[in-house]
Length: 334
Image 1 (cartoon, rainbow, N blue to C red):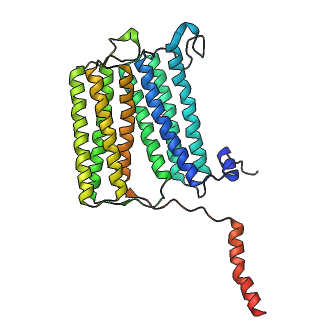
Image 2: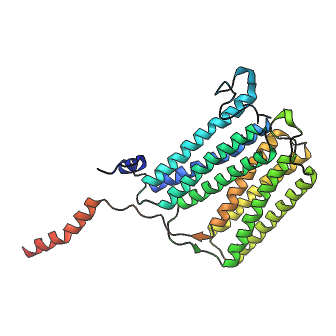
Image 3: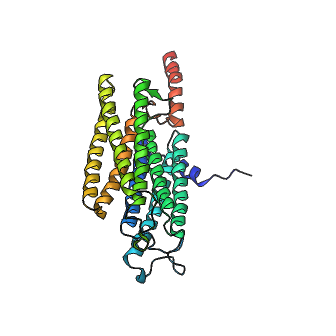
């Protein structure tokens, strides 16, 4: 009995996307991961966390929001629908990575990792609704989105490089400094999530007392302290890269990070001194995602893995090349 090909194998036999297309598909997953972070924030900031009262349906009797649910139901349901768009984009990346020749299993594994994070976070989102916006589950929901963004950025980077063993472009202590920056930025993100969980934007106007039981002023100060740590490490890394004459691309990545930090710092102080306006907080969430992307790109720019593998020549081309010496020998003998 002949072996049955799976659908991905069938597609791969009929379509071989270019390396540039695979990289663009990987970039699309990064964009959608940022969109999910921002729209998830919009759900919370518009008090629409329970716009749909249950999950997976929107109401016990309806899959979609009803007119009586108003704008909050539409916002929550719209965010749920974006999950399908995200799945489609991640699916395109998986198919493109699987169909590209030569096949790169590292890329397909990263694609499937994104898919399972999306599925897991959908379940966490459902638990968030079913638990009435438990602040700890809400925080986990956001952090899972950040995990998705992390894998998406790594996929984007890997799609533009080869599969050789990583080779450091700077000395090990410099890489360690960059790793410390990643850890500090990760802690900054986690603490920022806790700040939101202790503040006035839980996602549902009917449960303003549903908060993480920590002092909002103190946790905000801790968040600011870690922001200064990130700034200090970024400045230190910049001067270190200049001192060791690191590649220009790595130094550019640090400058991009400086821009993100400046944007995020301005937004943070504006929201703090203006009573936490919803729109500004939304910009702060966008800035958080962009800053995390910039930090990851700095870290990944300090090593290389060779060029993208070349597309193998078709079999008939190999045959024609092999026949040329024989033909030339026959002609000379005559």
